[in-house]
Length: 252
Image (cartoon, rainbow, N blue to C red; front, side, top):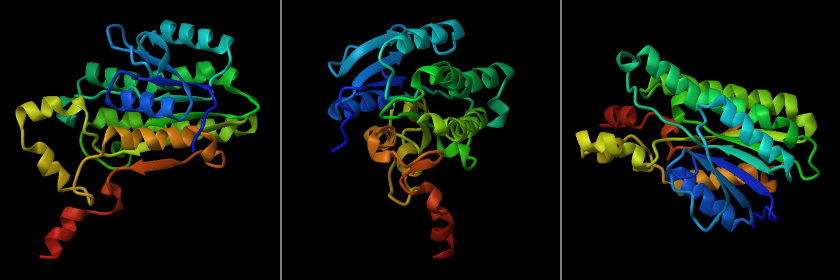
């Protein structure tokens, strides 16, 4: 029922697990998918209408991309999905790790949205920013630099929603729990049983699937969510609803 009517939607990190799901769901909903990812990634899916390879950590490349997109028909939505983390605990957060994870997970998305704001304003059908955040922004599950970046991303989203609503722009964030993507491969290599163990922490008994995150993001980007701005939507298999391991302990 969601139909973008051929309007463009930008997706960053489009070659990854969630990114690929976003491309597929957006295309099925009638969007013209403008896919972005690093050099060397595969953006040849038939659902992709336009592919752009550049590094989000390159400020000039981000500005150049925004300039190109802003000259044509402005997109209906920007879905900032790109993200990455490896520093699992405070002891792992070197200065280099802190800078890299803050830059990739927050700063790049902030700069891209800021650069695209002029083109996005005052469209007849409105426009939207959707940021893929994380439950790490809501409670501590490790990866402190990543968590801080995602919390900053949520704050940036609220700033856009508050200041740009008068210009027909909405902004929201999707808050996934652990997603079953390739990002888990390094953990699985060290501890193959980790998925089963982590699944027990979730009320639904499993990790979140990429397509579940994609559907939520596409909804928030679409006209179906025209009255929703400045909020977060958890797609976390129930993780933030309560403390299931605690209940298991006190329930005997």
